[in-house]
Length: 142
Image (cartoon, rainbow, N blue to C red; front, side, top):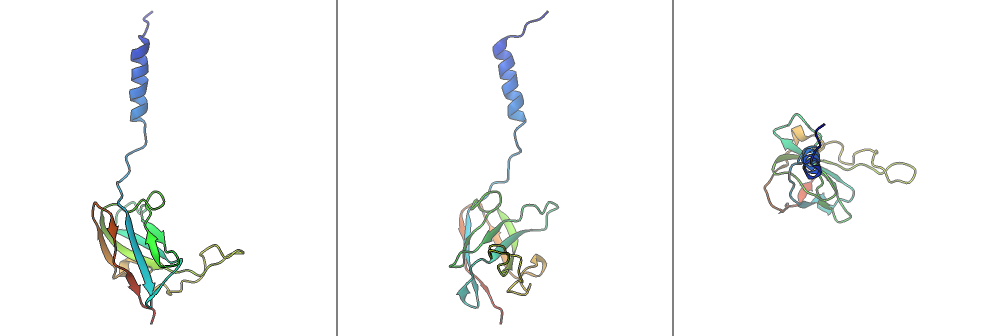
């Protein structure tokens, strides 16, 4: 019966486990911005970056929620991690708070859906391989 050299077996196991790791995720770059509605900061407005051209896997749609000053930091995989480099169509939804404690956003869109579809968006952004601060998005409801 053949005996295996213990260090060789351990090294073999380490190489096998390294090969079984999760696939590399797409690198992201910090992106910040601001949203104004009729010239005023819009709190709790959702911003969605839709990759263009449209990819088969639409699971990677970076998004953010604005704070009380209308400022946002985009998320793709984790909070504030940013966005992969590329071209995007930007969509917006500003839902009324709903639920018992008014902490959900399933109410009516205060923008009446005018900015929610990437196909009709006039907001186009290119993100490069570096941190980016965008010019404010100015939405008009009137």
